[in-house]
Image 1 (tube, rainbow, N blue to C red):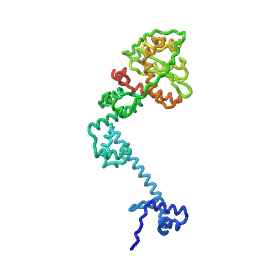
Image 2: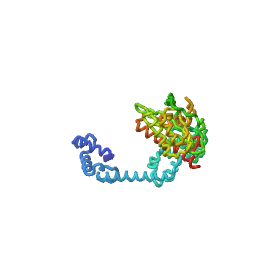
Image 3: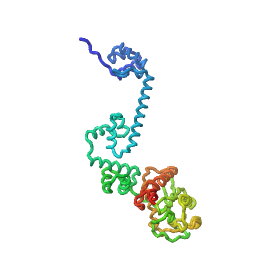
Image 4: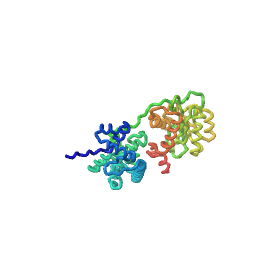
Length: 385
């Protein structure tokens, strides 16, 4: 009876050849692997010629090693280009939910490999197959859309927003959802808004300087820009020390028109730089009311004379009454809750300056929705005028 010829895998052949070179003995290696020395010698001869392309598998053509590297590089390049094409098509569609991604894959399954599309879009191939076999109901699609929208807005705004503001933002984007629905789905998704933390007041009002009367008297709305500005100073802890943030807010649209971050609490390093920024950003009117607390930075002659030169009226809060400057206090609470308290480690001065700039200029003044503006952004509010 004829002996059945054994078939050896490509991996076995490659390992046999490399083992023979390692031991420098074809005969012993062949005996150990239970193959003929002649066959092993043949494999070694092939390896010397083709290297890594010696044993491509049954029915596949051998490729010279250098050609194989070129082939693999060209294959990777072609795949990268294909991924880019797929990504561009998806971006044009602007999908709002995973179901829309599944639909895209299904519609293009004859155009692109399903596996590559799933990888590019970050979805599971098995889940795609499941959804194609058992499509979602209209209700499931709606719930999925709600959850994706809530999650997107929640993390887009760095976990700062609660159910009310998230609901308003989603409705603004064309998806109708109630606050109760947002609350319900946020609980299901385990999304929790970052909580407030207490902070201490740094105002030094124990001085003999002149104290202006409280002209503002808690009238925190106005009908024109540059009619009332409010200001305050707070501390921000960094590595080994503190920085002091001074802001000037226009009550008309709640915009931070001037701000400064300093390492000292003097007038020349806090309110004056913030004031100079404010008057360069927004033209002031004669009779502008400038309201602040009773801190020495605002009460000293250097700053009061600056206000007098611009024909502004100074107003100060009552002693120890933070409610008289509630708008500034509210801003600092939001800043610390949304930015400062979310930091896991203390920032360097350079990092803090970058974070404050991004928060004020890119977030607060442009994207954040303000309850005082009926949940519009500052840009949306001013565009309606």
